[in-house]
Image 1 (cartoon, rainbow, N blue to C red):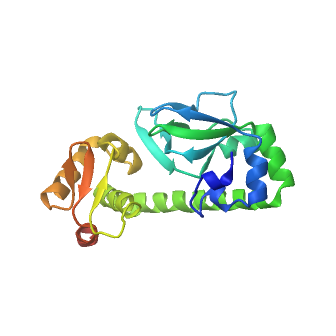
Image 2 (image 1 turned 30 degrees about the horizontal axis):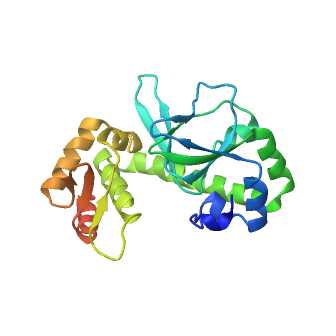
Image 3 (image 1 turned 45 degrees about the vertical axis):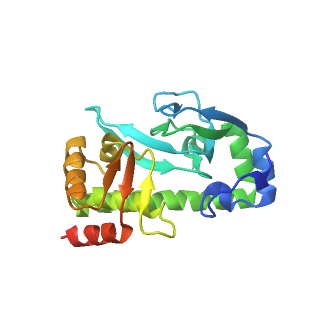
Length: 231
């Protein structure tokens, strides 16, 4: 696989790699298409400790409470790395990883991955930056959970979703947005609570449903709504 065929965000794992590291890594992995809702990683699987890289797609890391409630931890997109924890420490998986949409994923064995990390300083540094990023994002979510209400967390999550897609104009149309249940898992809330707040946001005119898409008529108005609604 040639690197010039693909574009990854500069802050992602694959986007940070040098050409030499990319060539070495991509020569060792295998690539496969995973359909939406397919499990890449199952927390119950004690045998597989492979590492995955998102070539094109979206993957959600999630856990389930004893009561069966889903809690989403992180979402991975183009250029991101998944499953490196178990590959490094050989401990059981800590979460499931599920394809949110049809995704092209590269996969490498834990043995090959550890060998690369040991001998390649560029890849080791990139991995360190990845782990620091995970820690910062999870720390922020813990702080938000303790400092903000479920409705505040939902508004922040929707704004973050929109900000990632905003272009030169002031409106955004999000095809196949997260379901209310998926948003609830992200903000540690219930589907009913998410439905109520999204109803209030529709009433305020800051978001609209267009068939299966989510339409934001004005990103500026949404930002004002989120800021004004904060206590």
